Image 1 (cartoon, rainbow, N blue to C red):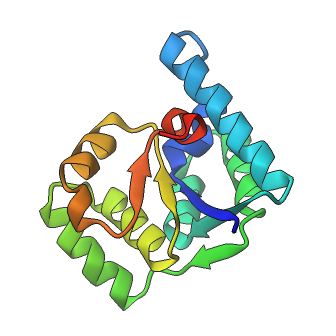
Image 2 (image 1 turned 45 degrees about the vertical axis):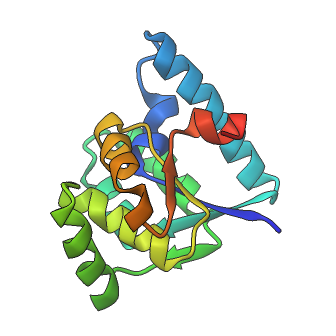
Image 3 (image 1 turned 120 degrees about the vertical axis):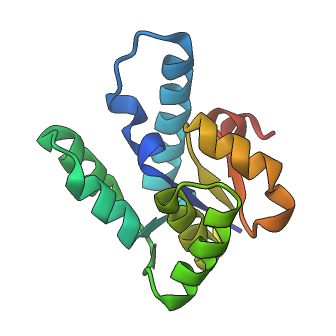
Length: 147
């Protein structure tokens, strides 16, 4: 069965970030591998209205276009409805920033296998509350390594 992955905006933008740190370079390589898997149809991309909204706020037109192109590959699209907002409210209570809580809620709603992020704060909080989440949250490098 194909895995369903939700990449947040940090992960989607990682290949466009300045490649001047080892961590960024390694995460970029992992994201590129994951995107290739999605393009080949080996993995299913999950997207959401919150991803579109965040991307549309980006002032860098080139970054915005790259992300929108990737979001067009999504086979599953999670709307932000009453259930996702209610869940985000709960997740926000764990200490997640509200937009991050919406990402987690949308990934859960879509039954994603994993939400991939390069956001260290999001990873830390989700790690602390992993037993209360209905989706795995990990760094793209860990996903590619199979951790």
